[in-house]
Length: 156
Image (cartoon, rainbow, N blue to C red; front, side):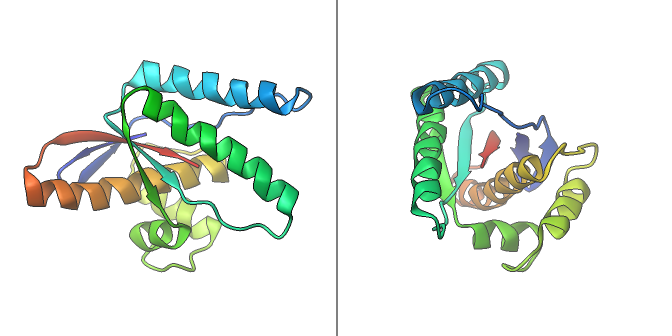
């Protein structure tokens, strides 16, 4: 999570959700939903952003990712939030300056752009990168229309 005010971004929080591995698909999706709902309830963001799905070579993995992504899109929508979606290339360009950035480059730039944050994993850094991308792009759109303070949440 980041807070965006104009072009300034401030680190709020980050982490990962780790649903149980031994439950059914429905139980694991519920775990994901419940964890996201708790974060949304605690931090009360005004907007959310999600990275678009990439196609995986394994159809089974792609389908499972699609189920989880559906929950990730639904949870903030149930809280009345607009949910923006960005391609991985757009996120990388926004944060690093190139659409072919590596995980290491993303992590380094996330820590540079959000002083005080130390993402515990590549997934947390990627989620913050989505939030940064949204903060920059949505902030530009808001500047054109009216401006204001918004909080952007990244989910990956």
